[in-house]
Length: 567
Image (cartoon, rainbow, N blue to C red; front, side, top):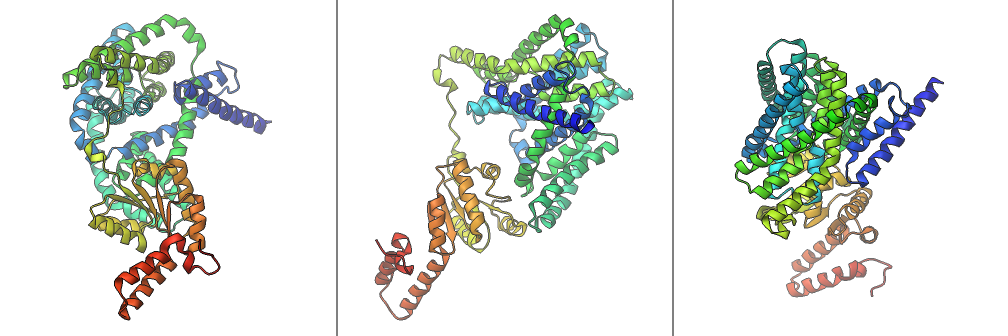
């Protein structure tokens, strides 16, 4: 009976997660809000299919750990340096100014102790990375001026989550004042980051090369999970949070050639577990409490959206952007973010915030996220009206640095390396992808752009920019692997030309049937090259040799293949 009850809970979770995420995604609200509503429906305050969400919440917390890891893996130092003025200038101003205003209101209106008010204000000052990035990508505005401004604010907010999480236990223990605690959390974070980045440069890549050399995908995935959870456990054992440990592990991987494959392997765990976390948050929302706090929740929601939109608009304008650009960024980031659920739930567990207040704050966050698509659409219309320019909402063309398309070389063995050197000599940009860590290391030591990964995975193709590439060159000597890459490339970017190395004419014909643009049978090419050299040794005319070779190459080498009639 116990197993039957557990199976019912698992089936209910899976069914509601799939249905709610699909429905809310189709409506434009995003999967996160769908998970929250789904959790509310099946939780103890809804249909009662699950009466103990605590265990699910503990499991779902690992989703937050993986999410922090993936944020860390994106924060490469070089990327932060290029955007330093926007990230650390505009982003810091937004967090501090918005957090201060909201903390002041929380202190007097709720009312709260200074430490709890500061935590609430800073938590609500965070915006939703998932919503922000999704809306920017949908409008193709990630490369626009205002899109980069919005992205910079989100980047700083993601970075600020780490000291905010570290601040919670300090407030719970009451070891220091709020200002000193926050400063101490920042100093601890910076010190740990500096030390582990130095250590990571020495240890992480050699360890991954050792594991990847076995060429066993499940072992590689297991080591990636061990890295994330191991660092999380270590940080938790010294009094910090697992999320901070995962964030540091991500930073260690940020400059690694293995980062793309690690992202691909970790992503499913993050999505599944984070979905459970948000559903658990929804299960914990008490409808009775919400019914008695309706006007408070609506008042807090209106105050949050209006204040954040105004503050962000003004700060963006002060940083040199136009008013219409400021309005768009303000409308994009006015909502509270998913990290608010994490932060406030953690604060409740540590006794910093009451359960009733966290339920109220969670409702405000969820409603603000639900209002974001409509608010953002209104911001775009207002900005166009102010500029009298309908084209203002059109996609911004990429800069000159992104206009030159690159070549992707799948496989960096002897053939791939030869092609890479030819392209390098011709000053044609390319990226090599290989599942052999020795090949990747060799390519990087030669100064080439190379990553560890399986080019048959759509996520890896997206990571190396297959949608903007000039063509894909597959140099592997494994026909089955080449087939998987061709099929994956056709699904991911159907217009991408694909050039493939094959063993013989029959294999070339099979790969062309799968969608390869051009195939080169190496055995036939070797015989043509050898025959040409023999003819030159016998003093044959070079023009005649080139003519014969051209004829033999034409029409798919039919003249060279026994039993295949010429057309």
